[in-house]
Each structure stands twice: as C-alpha cells, then as structure tokens.
Image 1 (tube, rainbow, N blue to C red):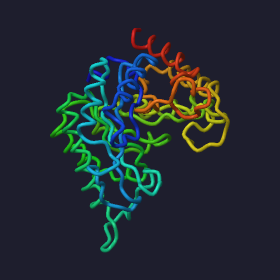
Image 2: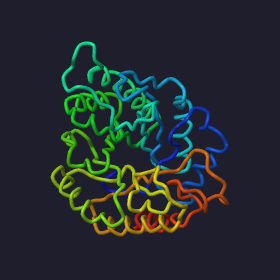
Image 3: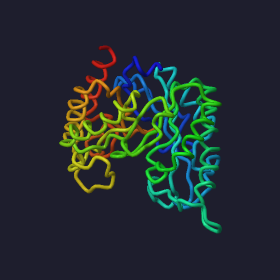
Length: 316
C-alpha cells in the first residue's frame, strides 16, 4: 500500500457537503488556500447523506442536501490538480440532529421494528455508489464509515460490506472509528488501514496513544487519524470533540492543542498522519479569523504550526 511509505499530511475538505456549495469559484479558492496554508499532501473529501432519525432505515443519498455526483467528481479533480491525494469520505447523518454514533437497532431482527438488516441494505447501496466513483476518479483511499459507534458491533455486516466494496474499488480501504473506540472494533483485519478520530484532551495524548498502540501492534496495520482537531475556543483543548462548548474565540487554545498533539504523536512512529478537521468549501474572510471559533485553521495561529509540522514530515 502506498500509505505504508508516505506520511499522510491531510486536511478534511468540504463538510457537510451541501448541494450547490461545491464546484463554485469560492470552493475552488478554498481548496487552493487549504493546500497553500497547511502544506497538505492529502485531503479527505467529506460529505453527508441524511437519514431522518437514528432509527430510520433509508439513506436517500441522491436527495438534497447531499452534493451531486458531479460536485463530488469536481472536488476530486480539483484536489488532483493541486497534487493532493484523495480519500473519499461519504458520511451518514441524521436530519433530526442526533449524532450518527447513535444510529442503532435491536440486535435481533424483530417484526414491525426497524432492523439492522434493512439499514445495512441501504447503507451498502450508499457506500457502493461512492466506492464506484472513487474507483472511476482514481481516489487513492476510500473510507467506508465514520464514527458509527453503535453499528461497530455488527461485525458480520461490516465484513460483508467490505467484501462488496472490494469488488468495485481497488484502492486503500479504511474505517474511521470514533475516539476511544479503536480497541472495540473487531474487524480491523478486513481493512487495509486503521483510522480513528483523534479528539483527545491536550494533556491525555500519551495515555490514549499507549492504548491505541496496543491495537495497532496487534493488528499489524498502518494507522493514521482520519479526523483530529480543536476549535479555536477557550476550553476546547480539554474537550476538542465538543463543537457546542461555550467559550470565547481563542487562537492560542487551538494552537496549543496542535502543539500538544503533534508533540506526542511525533514520538510514535506508527502514527502515519492526520486528516485534520476541517476546512469548509466556503471560507470566512481572513479578517474574521480572530472571531471565528470553529475548527478551521485558516488565518489563525495554528496554521503555521500545522504547515511547519507537515512540511517536516512530508519532506523528511
């Protein structure tokens, strides 16, 4: 796998992937700035399909607000024109605002109740649609799911899905498990790469990396963080996964988190990179960076920290 001999200095682009916001001049400028500001060599092109509730069993990925196939292909072409390698990352979310980790059904199929079998049938169609696009467009990696914590236990269904994906996609396949879940997934062996969401408190990286390292060594698979980042907001370095946390805008907080994360991961040669969270298709003006308290690093103190680190790893 190419991933074995190349550092992944990546940034996630385009989330949530709302129809009509890609394939525009503003989106083109956004991706160009992502590349130049961070020094990235990879990007995860991320977008959502929306099911109604956590107990819905249909994922209508062809409907609004999901980006069109033409928009997805546009983003892949644009990334490749910038010499970025691409991981295509379709994500399922819930229209009622419930986090996708809570998509869940009874362990046994029960008549008159929504079923795992029905959900996985729809989810498989969703994933195979984009796996075929990833193959057609030459994406170097494909992510088959993101932070579906309650679904992680359905080992047989995931193994069946991975086998179907391999029939249409020939590149590197991964799954993005949620933070703290690396040692709960029982089907890593079926994938090419282990990846997870690295939203760990700034002072807890060593303990969490010790735990993850045991999984990586046991599986003997490459590993990188498919997501990792921190809002530029007071208090966020301690709870980087909480995007609703109340706090004042703070570039220093975000920069400090990145320094802590990079410092700890630098001492672990098995951490083969990051797809940092995140970079929107429509950027805020640079003069608004000091008051922007979201994850994007554009115009903030964390940006040169990221670029310096990525440049050293990619060129080293």
